[in-house]
Length: 454
Ligand code: SF4
Ligand code: SF4
Image 1: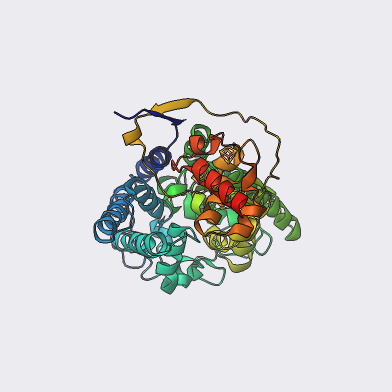
Image 2: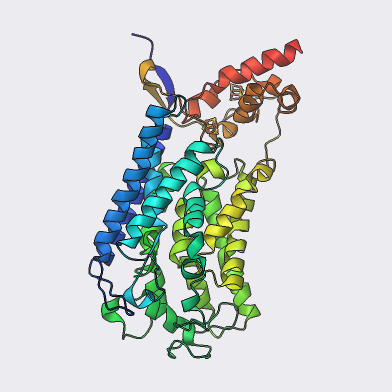
């Protein structure tokens, strides 16, 4: 039997498993919360499937489609890796970023916010996301769940994203965010400053408690009954998200989440001042805790493959995402604007990767490493780089092992020289920490040898 190898305990599969557990916890909370609701279409009087069961079935469908396609590609395409855990995470994100709704919101004909329409759409989004954005796109440029949702629901843009029946000019008369909003209990549909909180009450409150005065703080933080499945309870997302960040802090880009919510809060206050709101907290609570912000901020904005690799890049990414989210929501009346903002920011990642790289140095500085764990050599499975950036943070010479490996694969000697591969002293920390189990040390030392020959 070959000698066991020592690595940090975290592997890509383990990271995916922890993420999956956090997502399952959120799904269960949403399903339990929504279980007492059976939507009725106010236009037709038809009832559909209980909302809690709809959540569970949507989750099973999206995960089933994603895992099935992953397995199919593995069988049919020679170099397609089998990544069932990652596929399951993707499938669940599709369901948790999908909007399901209360009866009173189901006014737009054909709006797929309840069963069975919702089943068809989550299946389609999972299919398009897996095939187009996860399998066929060599390097993932945009978040697959966000891009697939935008693409599949594009024909329903006015009904789903802008929701024209929600606007002041539409059936529901929702006050525009590009104007003063307040906290009173005036009837929805008037021009009064106070009607936005009434809208939030009508849209998100427990149908059994609809007549109570609005408690917007409770609604936005504890339980909403409309919108992104994953955002039904902000507090559940925060608890699951923070638990995941603590367990995998070296590998998850939590700085993006922090910068995102800080910039959303600041932008919201600025908008309140600009539009002379009578009550700043209503807008603030809405912008920070709307399902699309809270779920996306914790579980989509941190997708390692489509976000910057450096800390500075991550902070800029988070700020840009927050600013764009508020601008899109305010200017376009696009209440889930974070999804469009995410796709736009994903496209800036190659530029942001250039910002904040540590300066390579010849002198050695030992980093603090996580505890070592032994793995039997035959159980060490190599994956594709997941762009967590951990290898860059443990190099005692501040090198960027993953960038050196990529330049080596392309035989790009100019970049290898710029990245100072020749400073490597072969300590192996980069290989030790890599959750994808890439032999970075070997790549960097090969690059060093090539540079010497040059
Ligand atoms: S093996 Fe080389 S590149 Fe990797 S951490 Fe050590 S010095 Fe840095
Ligand atoms: S090569 Fe570096 S960035 Fe890629 S997965 Fe390994 S540690 Fe993370």
